[in-house]
Image (cartoon, rainbow, N blue to C red):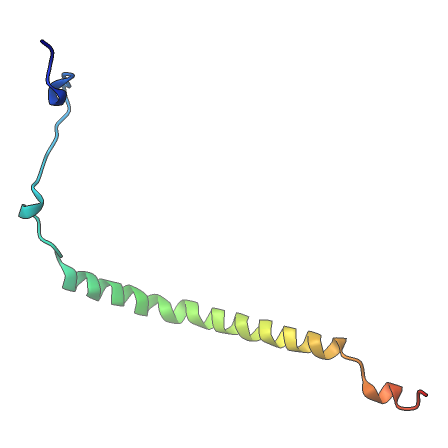
Length: 81
């Protein structure tokens, strides 16, 4: 009367592997992964961070200097009536 839902077509040359979730480790190599993450972070931190700090300092200096230049000098208008 027809095939069942799981056997609707025949597939050749395809290998499928199934592993029960109960047979897997919940956190495999978690300590190694944490050490590896810390090593990667600490090795790249001192190469990347100074550039961002310098860029931020230049940006903030440029903004403050621009505000200073856009401001009118009150001494120029002392004698106006």
